[in-house]
Amino acid sequence: MTGLANTDIPRLPRGVRMRFDAVRNAHVLLAPERAFDLDEIATEVLKLVDGQRNVSAIVDELAARFDADRKVIEADVIEMLADLMNKRVLER
Image (cartoon, one colour):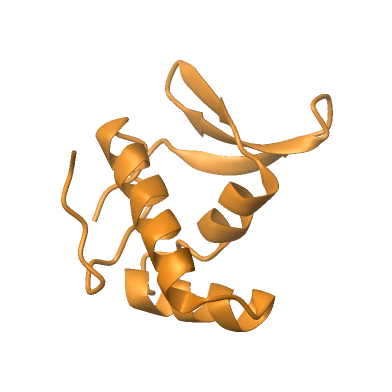
C-alpha cells in the first residue's frame, strides 16, 4: 500500500480525468484503457483533488461540508486515495 500523508497534494496524472457519464448517470474516472465507476462519496472527494489542496485541506472541506467527524473522514479519504494511487490513477 502506498503511504499517504496529510501534507501530500494528490492530483490526477496526465491522461486521467473524471467525467459524468450520461449513460450510467454517474461520474467515472477515465484512464487509458480503463474506467472506474465512482460512487457519490468518491465523486465528492475527487472534485476536491485539484493539484493544489493537500490531503488535510480536502478532509477539512469534506468535514465542514458534511458536518461529520474529521477523523472518520480522514481515514476513509486516505484509504480511498491510497487505493487510487496503487491503481496508478492518482499521484502526488
